[in-house]
Image (cartoon, rainbow, N blue to C red; front, top):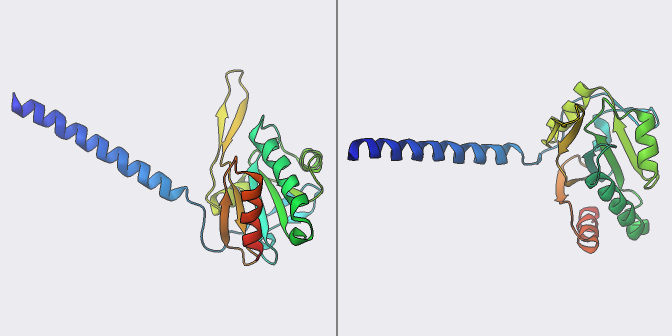
Length: 193
């Protein structure tokens, strides 16, 4: 009797260990990049101007990966960012804000322009070919995947944190979704200093 029970217990322990290793690997792979961004890509902004990896150099930036059909998280986040920019005043005048579409198949430059300017003219929407956007998503190690809906359509599951990037192109920090106004602005100020 001890033989079969020992085999079952050993098997369960092995399965649990494999799950634990998988979770640790998933978390490690989903950590944002700490070094400078190095992937080359060709996208367009919401005014149709070309955008490449050089946008990550020369000025500090707040980056968000989302999509215009997002029901709650994306509009809430961009509304908050617009408020933070007002609160920062001249202290944040050199700060760039980029909204990268994780749904570039539907988010055209025209759609992106109408969307981002509804919040503030300080946010630049960025879209383009899906394979080019995937380079940016993978390069910053953020999560973005299509999730089918019951009605045959789809929505996007994506990282909800804002990325703070220094003028040197390196990740300086994150602002998680739901962070309070004062804490978010302090985090941005700390990056700017």
